[in-house]
Structures are given as structure tokens and as C-alpha cells.
Image (cartoon, rainbow, N blue to C red; front, side):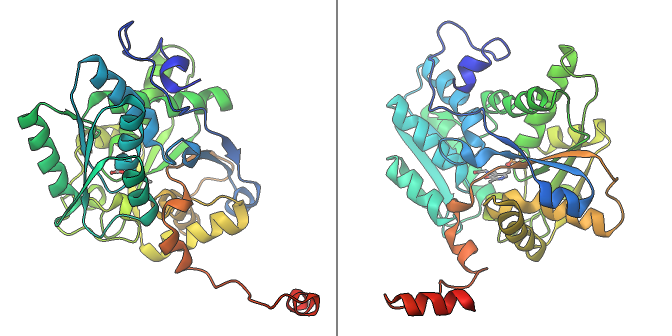
Length: 346
Ligand code: F0G
């Protein structure tokens, strides 16, 4: 059951809303035994990389595209650091509607680029950063009457609330800490709205602290001012002027949470730890929260025994180049058993 069907009563859908789905949502929430023990907390990971296009974007995109179809939109347009474009292109293909995606030239992970092209979107590389591409996408959508499916589209954030609902259902409560990477700041805002909605409905009593993590080279919410030249290995969150900054700040303030930043080295170390000790391969941006929790632990600021959920927003397979730059090559041998046994003994 997709997000629209599973949560139709909680979402702004009508009889006229198409029941679009690619099987998004209902992703696993996994307890990370080894890393929990290392950190002295109960750490859960929400595997958003298990969504059909490999990232959390599908939860909101299915809503945005369904609503665009409902209102008779002729085409979809978005700017993206990669995942939004993959997701938009996938749902556009399923819904038979043209899709234009604007990407910062040369700054999108290989898997995401392959996806957008395979799904048949018109892919446009902009020689500028994501923030500029988003301005252009918004202006073009306005001029041409196309549906913009970035998170400025309110239906995106509605659909993304479903992640919070699933976590509460799985744990029977909200976590103490909700740790999440922050780029354009839509997802943290959507999760907060989802938790609050569940509290208002009496489904949970306590709200989590919202802990937002940015990359040090693209950390406008930590420094408090836009970052004109964002740079980070975590290209998904290479964003200098988040459109939902106001909502994200409110979520953090109201929940007694905080924004913090982690370096590229810390992100890559967390990615490797998550893979090699957790068995989960997530893309670099998704590992910013784990890097943050490790940093908190080192600083003595990680309360013992808390329940923390981190949102692993995107699949590690999306960015094979960054992964390969971290690890060695395979051991190569001929086709004899002797050679095999010899390398196994090493
Ligand atoms: N993690 C991943 C893997 C992402 O792709 C993004 C955003 C984020 C975290 C941050 O989420 O923007 O809601 O704060 N990716 C967008 C894109 C910007 O174009 O795919 P956010």
C-alpha cells in the first residue's frame, strides 16, 4: 500500500486525487545493535533508501504529482541536487506527464543522474549551484503554468509527514531524538509537522527533539546566514539558502533541538561505520546525523540510553564514486583454487 492509500485520512486528498503509487513508504525501521552499543543509546535507522526511487523524496513526490494531475498540470518541473529529480522523473513516467529537471552541472551523484535520464525526464544541467537552479525552476514554472514539485510545493511536505507517522507506529511512541540531515530544510519541517499532528490526534504524548545536521561547507542554519558557495562531498545537501529555513528553525526551536554541522571527513567516516558495522549502505548526506551523534558522544553531550531515530534519507548505491574513493579494490586472482585459498589465509 502506497502513502496516499495508507494515510488517505490524514492527507489532503479528495475523491478526485489519482491513487498514484510506486509502492513508496512503509520503509524498515531497524535497530542498529553494534552502533547503539558504541554510542550508549538505542539507535534506530529509518531506511528511506528502500523507497522506489531510492530516497525519502518519493513520500512527498507521490502527493505532489497526484495533486498536479488532479489540477490538470501539463508538465512538472523541479531543481535538484539529484534525489528530487530522480523521484519526480519516476512519478512523471508512471503518470505519463512530461518532466523537466534542473541540476547543478557536475555536482550530481552518478546514480541519480542515471535515474533521471532512464525515467525519461528532460534533464538540464545548469552552470550554477542548486539555489540558483531552484530560482530558475520556480520562475519557469510560473511563466509556463507547470507544476513545481520542489518542497516549496506544500503537498511534498504533507506526504513526507508519513515518515514520522510510521516511526511512531513502529516504536509505539516518538523517539527522544530525531536526527536528520538538512539541506533545503523541507524534510525536518515535514517530520516535525507529522509528529505534531500525531500528538494532536492523541497518538503520541511526547514530541522528539529535532536534531538537524548539515555539512560544514554548507551550513547556513548553523552559521545563521546564507552560504553563497556551498561545498561538500555530501552533494545531496550542498545547499546554501534553504527555502524552508523558517519552518526548520521553528521545528528546532519548539522542540528544544538544535542544528549542528559535521565535516566531510566525519560524514565519510560515519558512512563507512554504518556500512561496515551496521550493514547499511546509505549515501553521504544521509550519514551526517550519525556523524553528528558520534561528535556529540565525543563531546560528552549524548545522553545515555536515549532512543534516537536517524533518517537514512538516500541509498548508498546512488553515489558509487564517493564510496569507491573510500575503500580498497577487490583482491584479484586467477581461476585456481590454490590462489583462492592463499588470499583467504591472508
Ligand atoms: N538527504 C538526501 C539524500 C537528500 O537528497 C536531501 C535533499 C536531504 C537529505 C535534505 O533534505 O532538503 O528536505 O532538507 N535533496 C534535495 C534534492 C535537495 O534535490 O534531491 P531537505
